[in-house]
Image 1: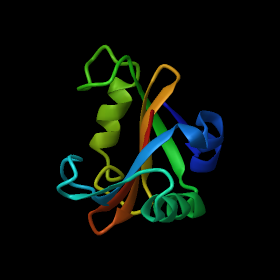
Image 2 (image 1 turned 60 degrees about the vertical axis):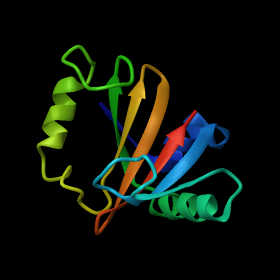
Image 3 (image 1 turned 120 degrees about the horizontal axis):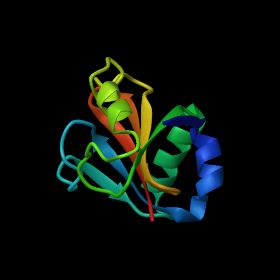
Image 4 (image 1 turned 45 degrees about the vertical axis):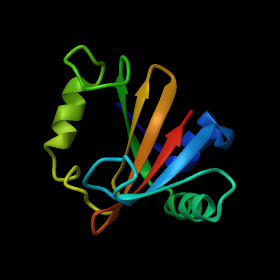
Length: 123
């Protein structure tokens, strides 16, 4: 597991690789029933990206071998379990974490409080 600022992560991955941004409830699925997806170039996308960029949270990056359910074979499996059992995972305002495989970031989740989140998805 490594930790970097959101702006540093975005500089490394590239703004052009943001696929979409979800704004909505933290607790629950990401099918769209608990929030809204914003595509690049839309007003909602710009607002959400500005909010997370201004906060510039430190992002804890957890590495999986491939996307899907976490398994004991994943690089950061033990660290992920420890994190999910910690107070930080209980949706503390400002907590930010990401999931990636090898060198590809899949998503970054920024906890905004009151069961709200901004999740940035990368292609």
